[in-house]
Length: 464
Image 1: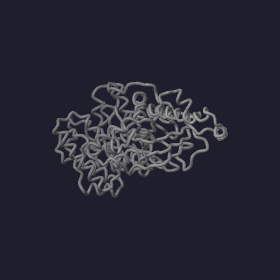
Image 2 (image 1 turned 120 degrees about the vertical axis):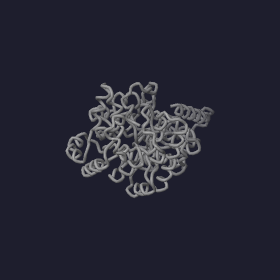
Image 3 (image 1 turned 90 degrees about the vertical axis):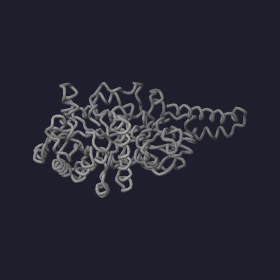
Image 4 (image 1 turned 180 degrees about the vertical axis):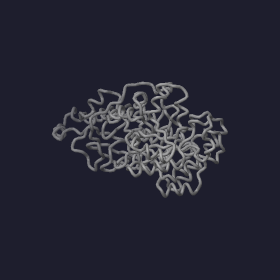
């Protein structure tokens, strides 16, 4: 959907609260833990030291917790949004990413200058980590120009800085040095109703179209020759085919996420041949089915699109096409997409794997994300119950940990978390020996006091 609301400050932002802060990196002992490994819930003890999971209990433990009854999952990732690519958007929405347990994100159409301003903010320990696209390319009559050019405004001027206009393969070659100078490891190309050239030149369709297939292919070749990857915005099944023929690395919408021209549902239905080609080329597809709710559709139109989405998802899954979770919901995050896909009937374990493993690894390749084995980054959410049985558990994280750091809105808790105490860490060995020698009633009562303190500390942690 998209860029129609990238710059709209009339959108209702989440309510402002105290921002999240990060503790120092902590050493953790998580006893009686249960965690989602991408397939099922596993059980055992987990240990964290220096920001990663380790095989053995650290020599010094800052946080010792009995996790009985709770479940750990890795953080969620958002593969398609635009709300963190400007300073204004960051100020409005960045904290809600952490609040919703979304630690990783891709912003798919940023202005290089704006991203340079936001980039340092994304490097903070209590911030979501973001992969930015700073080269967004469409045709001179292409999407999303209709959303940003009708009236002169600061927002429209900013959007024009974001968008590169290319009208032919020859122009792609001529403009490539300038596109390359925009930086980034990805570029985004727009294909929209590429199967309908008769729409070009008609004023009522200005800003709703996109690149010609041959121009998309030329841009993809130039990007790959320069070591960059390409994500393609698509609307129809024909756009999907054109993106595959161009050789893109990812497709930024499941066809059928919207119906801008009120076309028949079969225009969005993926063919078996296209699905097989996507699987053989290992082309990722970002789902964005949550964006459908942003369009004013009557019940029949909505039902028709949802059926196409179900069919397309089933085909892609059966063929083994990599699916990534992305919402394209400007005032939301990937959590909206998680629930939209759940309503479409995706298997819960598969859905959680997509959100917590496949998507973060695609956004940040080369890092050990989305796992609990020794050496994996120790980033996780603590839930009150099993999200496979009850997906609503994902909506209320009890604890957020990023690379071993506790994330909390309480500044005093963040500042003091690295201090070991009797309630959260093992007491010194000397203290254990002294306690063992004492036979007084006071000494006998001490373990009960420690147990009470441990219970109180665990209860307080749940409230964070």
